[in-house]
View 1 (cartoon, rainbow, N blue to C red):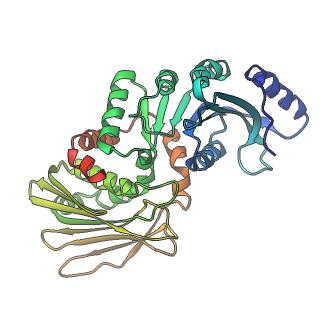
View 2 (view 1 turned 180 degrees about the horizontal axis):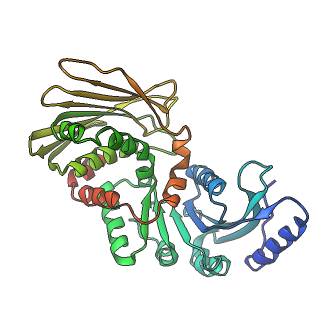
View 3 (view 1 turned 90 degrees about the vertical axis):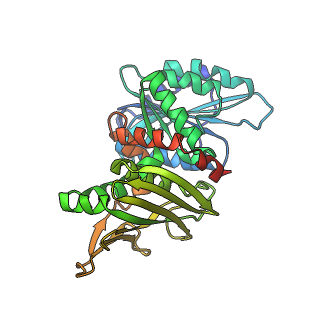
Length: 366
């Protein structure tokens, strides 16, 4: 049953009453962080709520969840408080949940409303569930409070501008920056790092000629920019190899990148596929061929997407296939991973620097 609407001045007294009623029960109040979520009132709001639940299962925290209705012409400010279990309903750990629904001019009051309810001496993680490159006075205020700013590049229609915005925020504020789509490809980055860690394997990677990446282009109400994870993966790999971009082209949802390496040109092509049983935007497979015909193949099991089949072959021999396991809940743990990682990823910042310079991607998105 949803919590009743209360006046903003009743937030702390109502929380006190809730916890007084829970005295003598097994419930334990816990707060490692202040987690502030902001999203617009639409279908994606449900997705952000699920992310919040995933986070407190690992990191019990005080949650302030702000939902704005920008399409409403009415002035609205509704607040509710409740206790959010850190897990299933039987969990002994619980967290404070402060929910704020806002529209119209009342949005200007949000910073003053939430400030008294931020727990002192605890980090403040702000998850901005909209495009940060769009001007918003509330975002200007929240970013000043943040220990870490967390975004989702899924929200942008202009990836180079998104990258430019994040780089400016990092330089201007000095706070940590994270991106959920970056976290979503962590398993792939770990897989490639563990595969090409020896000098011999690294030399084979440096000698790459063609790379093909398949991604799940099936769109949902939560995910419509399905190419971003594949774009990030190829951009991260090329930046680690110090390949120089020469050209970008697009044909519908297929992207082609030509790089220059010390051994010659490298072509990376991103191909879309549609799979209903897999998370939208997930990288499905990566195939790499070197100039001397070594071949590396990494592909998801379509029935069990967390299982990755790895096949390596040369002109002379074919190695026994291996299996690599991703976390089963990898997609639902993106924000959990970003919170658990301290600081800002230098690899991610390098990727953002590369993407902001690729003006062709803006044309690709339009």
